[in-house]
Length: 358
Image 1 (cartoon, helix red, strand yellow):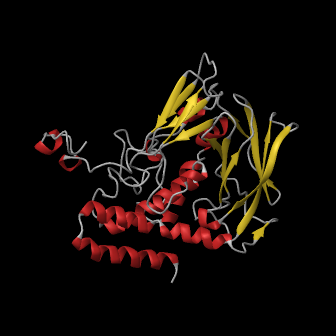
Image 2 (tube, helix red, strand yellow):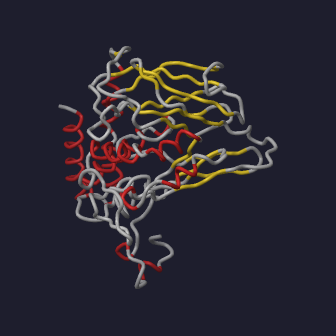
Image 3 (cartoon, helix red, strand yellow):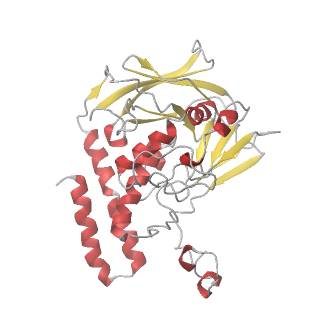
């Protein structure tokens, strides 16, 4: 039995058991079971894996750019994804690919401080997450990837100052809600030219709607590729469309990012495993699992955030010397359903209940 069929059977069994247990325990249990699919696939891929060290790509593989994120005083995550045909599932064969990475003090890579190899696996969309450690605090570094004779764009990143060290200033930006259809990313064009230490993305990195289902008051300027996204491949293609934007790629390459999500990375107004509309809880759990995996595949996150099906740890914190502490929250995975049918008016006893919804 393959992983998807195994997960379907488990969720089906939980549906039967759910008739005799309270709803909260049912949806939490089903969500845990949904986590088996990716874990089984990765575990199976670890045994006797064959890695192609000299791949030949159908086109340039680093179409989605590079990124760094989750910086610490001695470490940072480097990201890329091999995708020669980004809007059609990536266009990669179902084999593991060797990817070399380099970190240098200079953008010409004459002073390389660390280098190594990582495996881009088909189970994770041929994404690469390198956790580089042993770096100097509060330092700028440059990085790039190589595979099959191809070289990625050069990215720039920066480590945090030591915890508790004296720091007089911090320059950062926060971004969010980048509905691809509603505007061009000229804000990112300008952002990439700033002198920043770090960028925070507060959610709604993608929108799940089909073409022109969510129209701006001034009209849409470009169109989503494909209908409303449901499956893992759907979500991968949508992230690929967003990440193909030149200005967004430039902003990612210019600074380390710290990311979290809101609702549209899965579905509008979802709460925990409660969908907005038109889906069973079982179907939504599978959709959330696909959405969470695609999110991890496209963000510079540490392996501690690797999703377990429909569960993923995203909350974490960062300390910038003695100047600032940032607590990254996850306000979607751990919430009750919105009161009043997701509406704000008129108020009802449910929406005014301090002990109930929020």
